[in-house]
Image 1: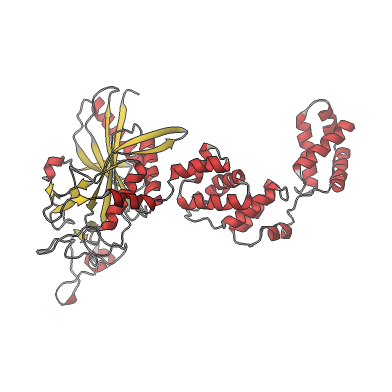
Image 2: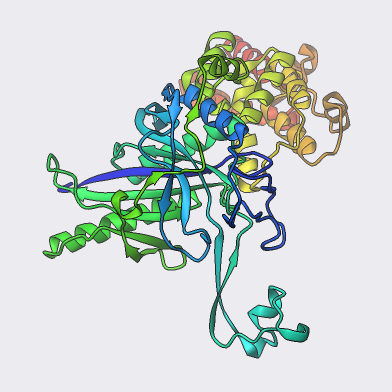
Length: 500
């Protein structure tokens, strides 16, 4: 531990608006390339941008959720740089006066609470997308054909070698860039922060959170230093769209920087990309500083003024936040802090819990099933929705609570529900013969028979060996095909042994 890791995260959150931030073009994902790029998005001569009010509302929602300062007056600036998928040569963003300033995100790493301070969250437009490839004539088609490009007379364009295509559908999509202070000290902490922020923006309804489609992507600024020393030189890992890749990328980058410094080298500020196939980061370009972008106020956009009355209106429409709901679950349902945190990991998961808890009156049992069997199956199957309705889980949990079925029988019932084999929990119980045996006379006959058939175990138990009792219970449960009420069976067996 001779080195300390320092990580800050910049998150590009695509806002869930129907149109772009400065034009009326659609933001729908998956359209044919370059069919959703308007003249405004391309900054053609004579066009003027008009700010999307919904994007501002979403920024205010985030600001209210993280407890920050919402600027009553903010300014849009032009960030100047060249890239093939930025046809106008600048990006409209915010620099000196962002719409959101400060705030914090709270989360846990294991059982340890963490709090990361935010520097800012500012509105900006997304750039287009460059698509890189290599022509492979032996496959019988060129990249031009696959993208529908054609030359004179409709003949396919013939690309010989490397090529890059530019899709401008994404250009102008509204982004909220959320920037942290360099507060994180491990890759695990960075990942848990990113997960907490992802949960929050989806919960607020301002982003769909689809990382595969680029709706939520993170840049990690990573440096190392000797404990107590000034910050080291950072390198920025761009466009991380997977929590697993984020952890791998940061861990690799940290070790790379440490090895370089211990060999007497110097870290140069740079932008790098993570190659998941080889598990390593690779330098992309030298890292720019703010002055390299020549920011200046956009002359086509007036300052953004946000009235207190409007902020109050947005606040009135805010959903109950995850931390608030978790506190309520502890208070109203008696859940432990950990249970409340897990059941509020998403809005749909929380709603499912509350529906089942209210219907069954067994909040703890519902939470246990959701954190155990349901979560395991959801994760293993990469599912986004629980196939068992909350009402069915509630009915099953109620039958566990009233001793109609045992826990082992409940697993059989749940498997049938998961496979969609029946709508009624009671019908499944009856069809599969899972109802617990609770007839005292019948149980007594089983206990007497087990005691008579296992004299050695009886002798060992009376000699003080508790394991022998468990063996007798197992024999009794086997005789009843697992249907005996365990509590009733244990009590009856102990009474018979004590009296014998």
